[in-house]
Image 1: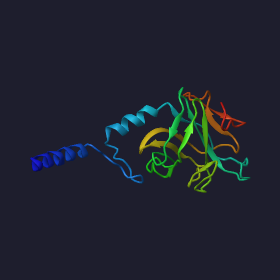
Image 2: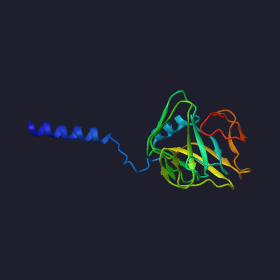
Image 3: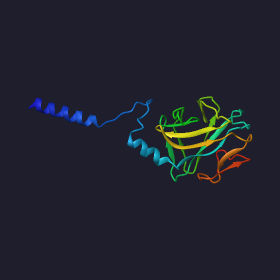
Length: 184
């Protein structure tokens, strides 16, 4: 009787454990996983690159001149970006170029990403890459799946930002005075 009970318990435990999937913190989930595709699609048109400046000659908070882009949350809810799940890049073929730290973007709020090659996180996020003034792409990825991207040609003018005419809209324009971290 004890043997039968023990054997049944082991089989039940094996069946239960076979349903548990674990992904180590520093590994990439397979992009074939349907839950990843659905989750990444959930954020499309919700988290967007809203404005960027490639030839920035104004100082950031550290008295440095650095390029930047802004991510806007167009939804009616706060969105928490979990560390190790969200990344940004200047090369769409390398989505995991820079992982974002855990942070929350408030509803209708913004975060600014400094592209100065410093690869550090303080009260500001500084990527390990710089933006190329001759043109490239900027992308936001969730679990390796593209959420939003902007491709730009050569930057025309110093200290001019490029942004959506209205926050989150499809139309873009230039801004003589950047609205970094604020509504366009």
